Image (cartoon, rainbow, N blue to C red):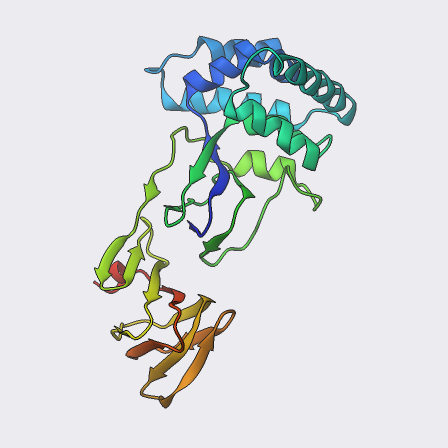
Length: 284
């Protein structure tokens, strides 16, 4: 799960079928790399077609795109960027088209630049959160966030990175679900504490904003948790730390289960912390 601290941009999950059809109709460079056969199958699909048929067609087309040779990719990107630069002088480019130009400047000749057109382009405002299921494609593009991740045994990369790319593994493991993601706004669970609860049991995250002069008490819970301080300065008190521990930006604290924590500020400014722990529903 990613919680936006600033304006945050991310690619996540496959766009809906109608949006993909628009891409195939209006971006000849994509249609050329996917191939007429795969593009034709996607274009012929209807909303009421069986999910397995849609998944199979999308997986085949996406795998074909991602397996594009360096020579063909470089040629297609050159045509796409040249065309968009020309068209930008006579019309306003879409958000996705502007994104392609921006990504190409950062990741020249990277298949992720074109693959971005297949994904949802999600924009988060500060305080909004996005949860990411297992085996779903995603890429953080810009901005700052707090990220909480369940225990994982792999990270498969395929684009928009200088690191090793394992395209075959990525294409085989994805779910190929098509839906715009739900954005979490967080729920106020007590004064100055907002909770973000994803639909899986591994974790939940609280945002704690401690105003100057206030005392915020975090009740004990059945599992351990971790605090990270991202702004301000103050003090953290617990039974094991009766005199308290200084807390400042960059500090991380591990708190055992069944431990009540008291948070207070030091100085005229607020202190902002995030708390990550096991999802409360796990103990219900």
